[in-house]
Length: 178
Image (cartoon, one colour):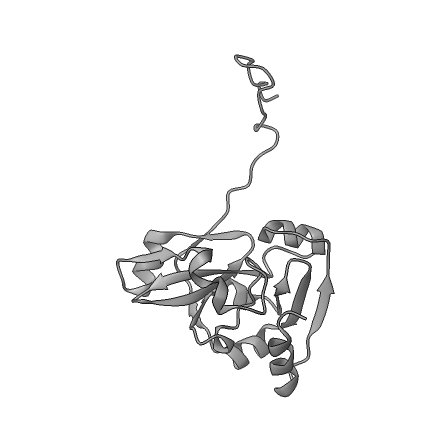
């Protein structure tokens, strides 16, 4: 079972949690849709390279990193997204792309988008592409102690399907909005 260590960690610390299973999904927004949860409460995790090491960044499924603002908030001028090949062996109990925001279990710091802290609960991948863990935000903050950042993130632009159409044949005009 992936992330058995995380579940033991939660149980050992008396943190109540629930698990939710859903159809396999591979992007954070697909996971939110498949699990029927709000993308603003679902934390997605990316791994960054900063100051010669790796760190986790957790943000809502509906957000992205604004690199210029993120680097400014971190007080550095160079941060980059880590390549999955560089870190997949650090998480042997997790499927690639399904990391929980518990860097303490893997020896790395966690940076958390502050907008997540305004939610009562946090949901995140349980190490697979078809299971989530849900626990109270207060329990997560007390147990993990992430560094919370209020700057460096932006909402992912939603496509307005009324204006976004694909062309079926070259040269075909897009429909005009009504």
